[in-house]
Length: 372
Image 1 (tube, helix red, strand yellow):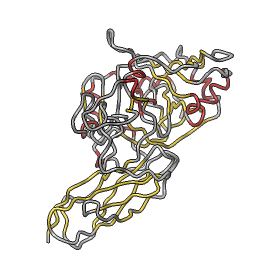
Image 2 (cartoon, rainbow, N blue to C red; image 1 turned 135 degrees about the horizontal axis):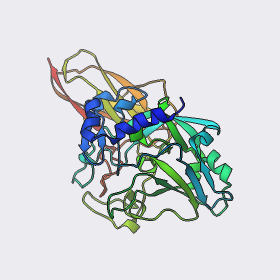
Image 3 (cartoon, rainbow, N blue to C red; image 1 turned 180 degrees about the vertical axis):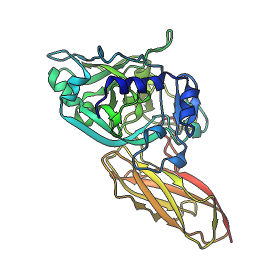
Image 4 (cartoon, rainbow, N blue to C red; image 1 turned 45 degrees about the horizontal axis):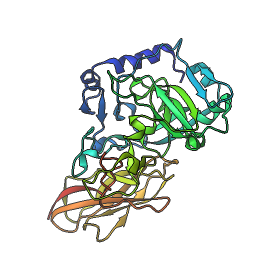
């Protein structure tokens, strides 16, 4: 679908509303803070292979400036042979690219960490699986002519921070950008909404959401990575994680990249009858290309039974799963889920604590009251 000026302004108008007004139109979303808008999806609503746009979580650092599409250009500069200034019409002339994959905020699950730490207190719902359409980063850069000195791709957006707050400037390794990254202008077959980065955002399959830059206006190729707070201090992972509560200096950490293997339960009975079968459902994903299996336990992990994976899958998309569970006795039962990805990584019982609360992936559990 073509993103014309009327569509873009309609989506932009939504983004300019006060958060309470925007969420009033989507009452199922859980507002995490007021300025800027951050909202997560209730876990029980994440049951579709493709997450509907109205239910897709929203993560914003600052309020973006809405561009005029008549003058908006994607600028490509730095270590290139030919700097570019491309309109949306120019981008649409390039070969079309599409990827169905998971977008998860790096901090999803921060509110579950113990001891707690500051930041948006996401629990389970800062994640979704969407069909992203646009053009390949490598096709755009091919037009500019990448110099051999270029190793990193710096990205700049139109979201200006208030006052002296550092801007959200990021970079991504050029090898990753050239491999499978997309500059998307559509989401689930519709024009990309403003709250999700219109007119253009980066899609980095398999990597955490801090790399998925929104409202992109400029790409700069460079021999060195981006510098600044959001590269040098934030979105970093300990080289050798310590015990819960142990913090590290920025130089003792490295940038967050791939998503950790993870499974969540979305559907399970709150009450059940012993010796009667019930459906338990959920989703699983990883920074690896696919999920190999999901297992469910009702005896605290002593034994595991394999769930059935949905046939729909794509590299770096989530896999829906379901399991037919029959409780054997009355009492309180705890259902656990764990996933194993296509590289053999197994979801751990306890997540690795880190001072920013990134990449939470401990076993998910639900409690069920079983009657005799």
